[in-house]
Amino acid sequence: MKKTISDVLVLNKNFCAIHIIGWQKCMSLIFQDSARPLDRDFVSYKFDDWLEFSEMTNDYPTINTISHKIAIPEIIVLRKYDRLPQRETKYSRQTLFERDKFTCGYCGNIFNRKDLTVDHIIPRAQGGTTTWKNTITACFRCNSLKADKTPEQSKMKLKFKPGKPIWFSPLYGIKPDHPCKSWLKFAGKVLLD
Image 1 (cartoon, rainbow, N blue to C red):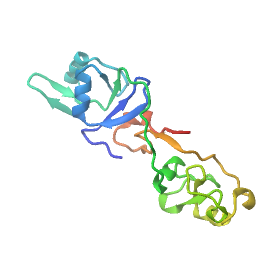
Image 2 (cartoon, one colour; image 1 turned 60 degrees about the horizontal axis):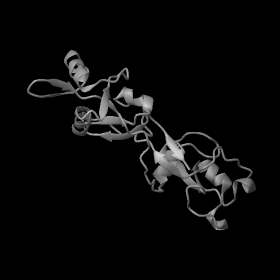
Image 3 (spheres, rainbow, N blue to C red; image 1 turned 180 degrees about the vertical axis):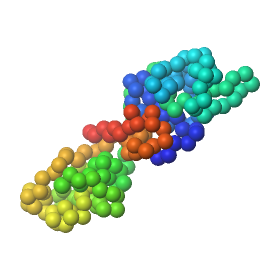
Image 4 (tube, rainbow, N blue to C red; image 1 turned 90 degrees about the horizontal axis):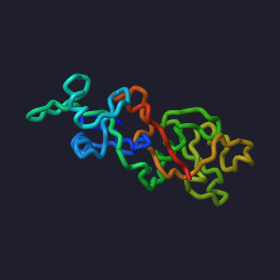
């Protein structure tokens, strides 16, 4: 996920990341007083104060109006919304790997995507299904050792309990080298049922 000049992180009023929007929508929310811009020290501003702040800084991309130079904030916080958006998470290899943070469910090591596979906890050969609660990320070595057995049969212990994700943060998986460092404070949440 790369930040462009038009990307703005949206936090709910409890400071949980819920969306990434374009700068036009961001400025509309600020002008309507539905959201407040945050500076890089996470200080909140009213619209008039943000205009004043914009005149004193050169650290942000700006838009120019007839009478003002307005900084485009990296983050805004909504004034009323405090829930998490409901999102149906589609099952796929990628979302499974993201749920498990690219970590093998048996040895606990972190791998690159190309070095991982999907393991059925109850193997398909024994009637197991491809569901969130019956699959886990595994490295090729552990998957080969487990083969077509259950963890108990192969004497391998699961490092974590799999579950269906009910919500992924829009910043889930953000890397430490992301160009917008202020976003890192809000990165990486997955909620399971």
